[in-house]
Amino acid sequence: MKKTATEMILFHQKVRGCNNFIFQDLGEFMPNGKTHMLVGAGVGLGVALIDKDKHQISHNPAFGAFIGAISGKLPDIIEPALNPNHRQFFHSYTVMTASIAAILKVYKWSPDTNFEKLIRGFVLIGGCAYLSHLICDSTTPKGLPLVGKL
Ligand SMILES: [Zn+2]
Image (cartoon, helix red, strand yellow):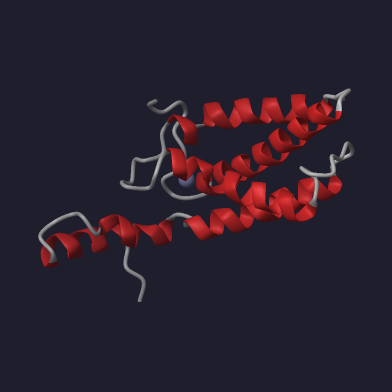
């Protein structure tokens, strides 16, 4: 039997007399760290494989997956899930829109030097993985804030 969030909160208030354990249980309502890293790794690998302008380091499939996994978790590293309102500025639709704009800009950029190619690869892969986190979170009942607090 699946309990609703409210039932679980009431249960913990009754049984433990405090609210400290609520959020662990609410975890099942939001993608956890492992899911975000897995999705990020998949996105990073995908971008590394399909991007047109590859660099031997940033677009190495294993490295792409690694950067993706870290970047996929990044929003929850900046704003850890310690309470149900942890999603603020770095989880917001504002940052989501800005990151889409940045990704498109970086995607169109044709770097001249090898180092610039590396930077482009990092930002593109990391940006897409970060975005995957916000997209996953936006599908949960709690959603994302429009701007959020800094
Ligand atoms: Zn998150």
